[in-house]
Amino acid sequence: MCHAHASEMMEETDISAEHHDEICRKNCDNHIGFNISKVVAPMVGQSDLPFRLLCRKYGADVCYTEMIFSNLFAESEEYRNETLQTCAEDRPLIVQFCGNDPAILLKAAIYAQPFCDAIDLNLGCPQQRAQEGRYGSYLLDKKEWPLVFETVKTLSNGLTIPVFCKIRLCDKLEDTLEFVRGLQSSGCSAVVVHGRKRGSQKLRRCGAADLAAIRTINDELMIPVISNGNIQVAGDIQICKEETKAAGIMSAEGILHNPSLFSSESGHNLQDVAIEYLNLCEETACPSLDCIRQHLHWMLGKSGHGRTVRYKYPGPFLKHVFLKNAIDTAETIEDFRKIARKCLQNIFV
Ligand SMILES: Cc1cc2nc3c(=O)[nH]c(=O)nc-3n(C[C@H](O)[C@H](O)[C@H](O)COP(=O)(O)O)c2cc1C
Image (tube, rainbow, N blue to C red; front, side, top):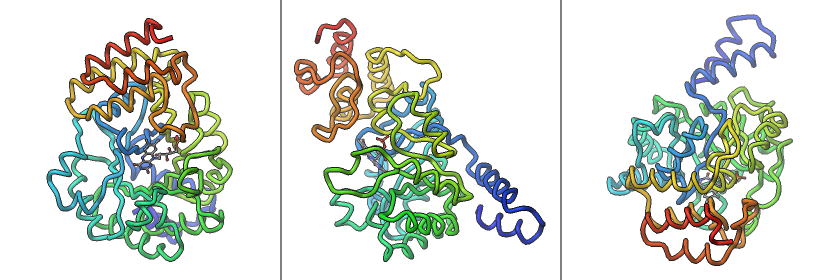
């Protein structure tokens, strides 16, 4: 893995630390083998195949699956078929798992490996069920670090594709730095940093992400960093890249609101984009009506996350009660298409 290359090179050649870092970074990029500049985040209930295909069409370099439970995936073929729906155009793809048992995570990852380009370990989920199940951000607690490092080692030794880790910030920056150094030396090929702390249940995505902390982490590591947080509109991408110097940026809420966020051309009509999404749903025949419903809430108006909405699409249909009701009661893709067309004609305003 990358860290092994790095230490071998240090012994064999007499190169400056700066040059060494550069070489190492390059090695890591090569090892990853795909572009990680613009990344669509893992999102439970919203990282469906048609949405990924839509984002790819509009410039995403790589997409994540939603968080998948490694124990269920390792055990149940039905769960595997349900959670990992993909196709030839759906690459590069990163499959994200949660869990706390290295052997089970490896078993699950081996099932997923033929269909994806990297495996990610979720170290950021802040929900209560993650606390109860001992996964996600609860593995950022210092007492869990040996288990996390062992897991990353097991995965990176047992897989032929790279291992990524998606983390949140620890309470203290020094702890975060120590933790990511440990991930790197355990064989992690890239770290995604959601620049917020675990916070409280209600405040888990509130406030601006700490881009300065992400910059410090990026400077500390030889492996690439993907910065997550504060990407709401296209202009944020450049700002975030400049502030963090990260190899890539990741968006979740922003790209739900506007799946053409990563496009090099601006001004895509969101209602047309929503219709394209619905066409892809028909072609791939995979997401549930509820998943489609949530996407339409995000794309056409109100966020599907009720009072936790932080950023809202500044369009004319925002929070409009008729629109909300129409989306909530639609029962077929054609119903949804009619709603998008009505939005296009301003019928809801
Ligand atoms: C609907 C939704 C579902 C999410 N599910 C996951 C998940 O499965 N795994 C994960 O690591 N993060 C998940 N997140 C967090 C995002 O990946 C991301 O880290 C967070 O929203 C911050 O990015 P943003 O500021 O671009 O929204 C989810 C976020 C949203 C909005």
